[in-house]
Image (cartoon, rainbow, N blue to C red; front, side, top):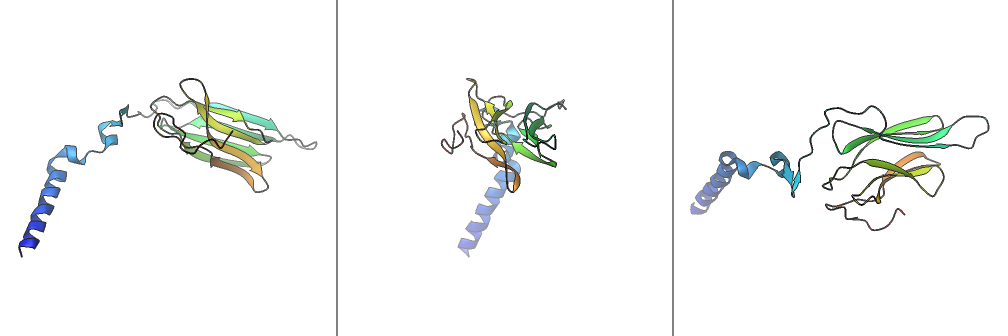
Length: 162
């Protein structure tokens, strides 16, 4: 019987911490900081123009077709919409850039293969940081993460996209 009572009182103490002490219940995002960074505020004005664009003409004598990728802002500062096109096919995806403690500005860079490009960003030193790859193959349009980043901009997957 004593074991049941001690378990019951232990549970009451834990619940009291959660309900009565707000600091026990706040997550880092609720407090506005996570690992020393400030919480990013939603954009007050979303730009309707693409913040990054890539367009490559497709070799076709009969049609005026392109492989194209455009990146657009959303209300959330690290989320962007990617519109992709190839011939008559169009697709869209939402991508979430990592929070590295500095402002992210999307950049699109041509890849070595035809009908392909990389979506990334520049670090504070101006170096291109690979993030997503966009390409066309026999299955159509593709987008895939090519690198992930941890706090401070460290590449968590090694060199794979260059």
